Image (cartoon, rainbow, N blue to C red; front, top):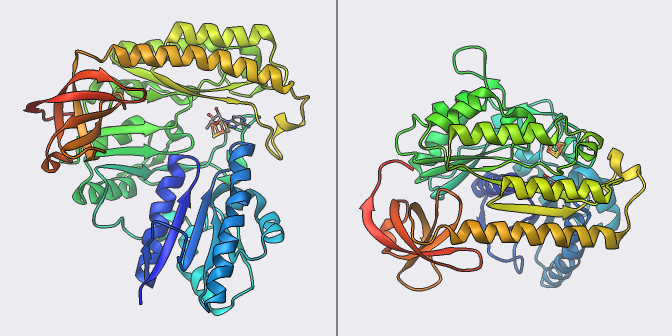
Length: 450
Ligand code: 5AD
Ligand code: SF4
């Protein structure tokens, strides 16, 4: 009988990629995907540690999983429970202590050993497996080829870990030192994704534009060179990358934005703060003016480029004046979209030892920033009405006869179209704006690029 695996993913797109690979790893040992934890033989929580709230969710979710596991055991069945991802990496021993019914805990660098761990857990119930080392072998060399069928818009991790050590961030501790996959390996995986139906690929990394992978001939490629090579794959119509660091936007990357029509004109470029004092305290290694200059250069290279960003408010020591500088920067740049967070102290990070700002101050600043960002997002979406944009249709919409796709600027776009158009890039005239998406009418003309 086929067994069932349920994987719940928290956090970033890198976790989404990892979860897909975990599903592929356990398929050959007999596990088919399940939409729910109820009745699943293997449950994997792929967790995120970036902010406190994200980490807390894991322990509350585990409460529910425990009840399901107990219920199965009463029926004489077995549920293997695994905690994976960044909470596992950072708090593995704590999870084992607080939730002893968890069978295995493994970090983002060891999940290629999943089949072996599942086999061990099946043999020896009740003995927890903790696998949070940073193994010497490169995980990517041990992962299976991607499944034969891909999503229209596929994810591909090309870089992992981070050496930047921003003072607020757990990533250097949970994902480890920076590692770039060899370019040939990335290109091979991209080809397989396209062969499986992908028309858009988003290359991923914690610090994706720090990419410096072994080149196919000799030497190293940066992200600019890699993107250029990926555009030569027939059938790959769109490329994106995330998440990038302002410090690592080099000339080759700017040239890629100028030259590559497949590279979509939307860039997530986190700035965190508009205050030089706070940026220095955060160890971001760039000033607000450096960021302005980088944005300007990118806009010169690709005038329709839209920007998205991440912000942290209430970082230790942030004054009213510092916060005002963030609002000024936002007003000046004009973001299509952005994420903003209250500073959340993370274990073992330098900023967590600093004196914290009062919660009401954090709340007030977050409200003010989000108000401004919302206004900018609305203006950006409103400006789309009346224009015609290329949309890559990804899947059926909520209503019959409707498809949902993405514009070059990542707007979700709903339009009436037959299912045969999934995977096609189609010109759509935008006629309306909803809270988080656009509605449009198919123009009927297919375009080759974008
Ligand atoms: N507190 C609040 N936000 C954080 N981020 C990372 N660490 C923290 C933290 N300790 C935010 C940053 C980053 C995004 C992924 O999460 O803005 O860019
Ligand atoms: Fe974290 Fe990004 Fe800074 Fe690296 S560059 S430490 S991933 S915020």
